[in-house]
Image (tube, rainbow, N blue to C red; front, side, top):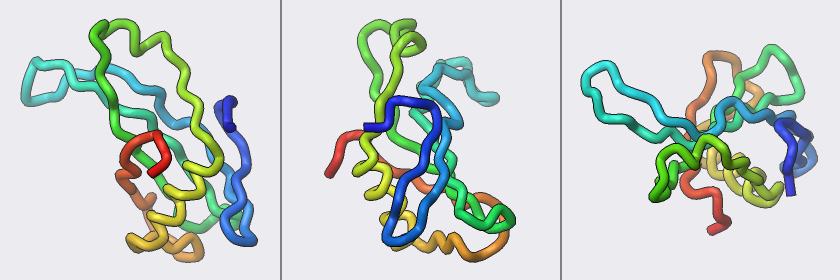
Length: 112
């Protein structure tokens, strides 16, 4: 289980670097004053540095205590990262291409 803020995960025969881009946090949108909970976000980098990165956004799960979310640490199993990366590839992310980051809504942190 990945319990650090960065690491390497193998998908097929390729090693991808990943890092926590954002822990879950509360934010206020520009158009409304209602706080919004943003989920965990992971940045996945392909082996070639000039190729297209993947931005995985996981669902936010609100608890009863809004301020408690800021103190929690999230652990993402390597198997869940592999599953999310493979799903992003099926949705059109090509790690060998160039261009801006591919943003993929990865769903829940729990394995499907």
